[in-house]
Image 1 (tube, rainbow, N blue to C red):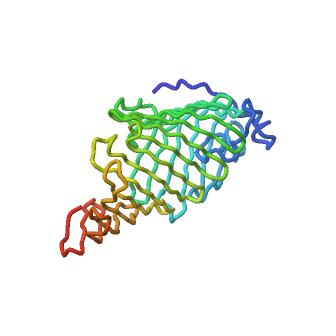
Image 2 (tube, rainbow, N blue to C red):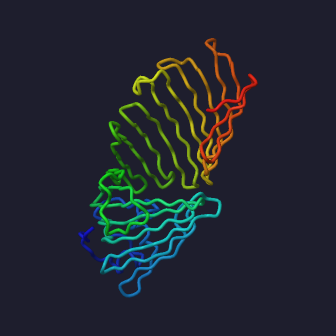
Length: 315
């Protein structure tokens, strides 16, 4: 991929001396929005010659250290994030180039790579632009072994995000991508108090809900998958709780499509490695429990249910 971005100066006389940004947008969320943001990172830097270096503890509970640098003339940037021992992420690397302007504008191309506690890796290529109060980010799924000079695979999963700075304490984003015949639409709100809240819709109402993620590394979601929109006979309605270590509590009811007639209820406690233990309850037409089971899911995805009818079932 050719280096097409311009490079420019992050003015040490303004931003890095503590005098603040000379903003072209009337709002200043850059001290918290968001911990992945390059402007936020540069606010924590010190300058020696043409290099701005940083080594600090970013906002939020999960990320314990960010160490890296930005070259004011070439635009080259790189940093490594480290995480708390109890968190499900091990490391996050950012590398690329671009212009981080002293007025809050951005023009960047970066590769972001993650490693989790299971030693799994994955990556994204981000094209980030922001002018005044509005921005655009394109996210491409990316082979972790590739370098940033590679163009994204044309079959890569791609997301498009438009952002708008609404105030000093609020930024909103609109995101979308297509997968087959389905289209994901997401409205996101980020604040200095809550990392983000999302309203999402996959496939024109087929799967929709809301989610909240906090700076302490926890979150929750409420979701519904509607049978009428998926050409199935069942609706699924659930709630998830997400925990700091990557584990989660997932509960959902199965209903006859278009009705409040409960057919089954699942409650599962998942570990980050995909294993889980929980329960299944089946209901009869009168709405009374008819079958109760203890459920176990292994790391390889196999599922077994030991039930009060004396049988063990695959699930």
